[in-house]
Length: 364
Ligand code: MG
Image 1 (spheres, rainbow, N blue to C red):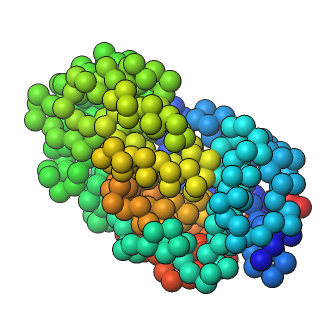
Image 2 (image 1 turned 135 degrees about the vertical axis):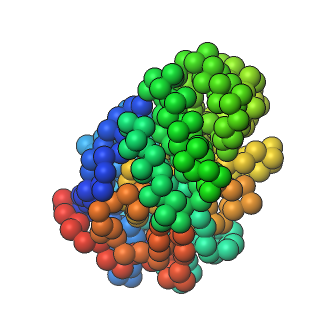
């Protein structure tokens, strides 16, 4: 099975309600879809969203990086040569992590098809069902409480609350949600870089002192403020998770060694794809550090790939934040990963098992 051609498409998915964090508001998902065609007729799919404020990648930069730098190094290459292919992808251009992630997904999809097995079985195996949390977007308190109760009704047992806009109001938001939840679900907070180190400690201490129990606090301070992360981690009881503070394997080692966080959030768009996500999980495992698998607001092609990694590395990836497919008004992608609110199930279809992508607008 040799790579013959790499094509691009655009895929849109409107959200049920606008997704709001301390960083941005998003109303619609739009991804670049990478389509790898082979000489055997098998087709592999990958995708990447533009996340300019997080990774620096835009639709234009993703397409340019792949078409000008990554694609020429892959044409004619054999899918069976997986490790050499991922090395080639990672070294074809510096940074451009989302572009690399999208191409790797398509390559791993084909690798699964080559051996007629779902991807997770080829990268570690495991139990094919995982449970995800759901994101409750930052908003007026009443709206957040209403969204929280709806999520519990849908069967979600873990809620990820986005806050980080205004420390005093954030304390009130969380107290109100905690009371409404009344121990029916776990609560994790994502401050999305919205606080200073001192604000983070003040807010968490106020919540901890008032008896609010939280599973974790994600990215309280600016991503590049590793000292700030360490400051917060040392001063609160709630475990701190790094999201924007860690991208690749080297940063993970650095962050774990400096104790800048207790937990690492792995996202394929930050790691540059599946190969580095596996490395990060293995590194964290060596140090006894747990990981979350997360995703961007992205199509369920990318979320499906993340689910395969989560299952294969479930001993380390104990926390799952792959709720994007349930945030959309519909899912244009039919794949081997079934998203049913909190429950994610991987079927036995080979690779990522993608059989249909509705409204995919091909660019070439
Ligand atoms: Mg986050």
